Amino acid sequence: VQLQASGGGLVQTGGSLRLSCAASGFTLDYYAIAWFRQAPGKEREGVSCIALRDRITYYAEFAKGRFTISSDNAANTVYLHMNSLKPEDTGVYYCAAGPLYVNWVVASEYGYWGQGTQVTVSS
Image (tube, rainbow, N blue to C red; front, side, top):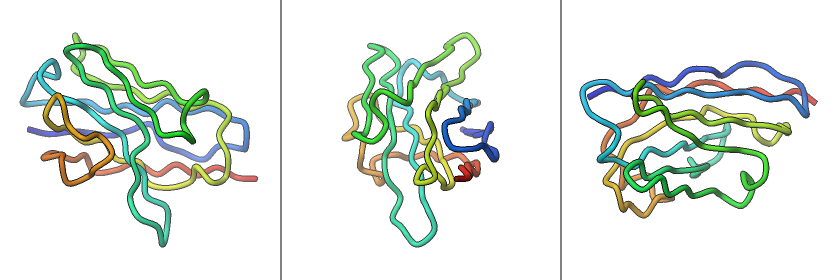
């Protein structure tokens, strides 16, 4: 089982990025896939989650209206579309896989993690 996160980069305030989380070794349909982020000196925090079978989505308050999580089941990939980026969105973004009905904001609920992709938003 592997998760490969990609798509990070350096953008200016107000810019957009699309992060990808490609899964291999398992089928997304039976999992919840979440994005977490961690800024320097801060704890890892949940950004968004999608329960693939029912397509139920969850968002942190700071992500609502700006970020959209989606999936391409045929490609076994989950995306995080991030718009109107702010400097406080800077951090390493990780994707994680866990049980379908996970308490999505709790990092310890997830058994599989990708390696992280750096997002830097300049002011």
